[in-house]
Image (cartoon, rainbow, N blue to C red):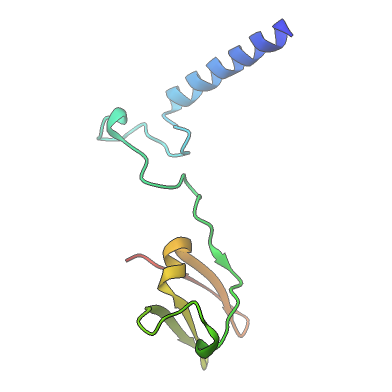
Length: 112
């Protein structure tokens, strides 16, 4: 038990020193060449890759979308005669949608 605890402590210290030396924080971002001091950099939300994309979205007719209001905004895409709308209130969470138009893969990115 004592050896396990010592091993755990050593691995923790080595990991800390390695990540500190490489300038990699637990966020996964390389901070070696930042012009802002590291102690002034704060989290701005989810960690790197923490926002899930919307993959293979399901669709319904607007008249059946009870979660939408007449004043809700949508991101609409028309391609090869197909029109699809992605509600902004859903895109605000996912930010990226991966969809398919007649076998053509598309990725839409919302940045307001």
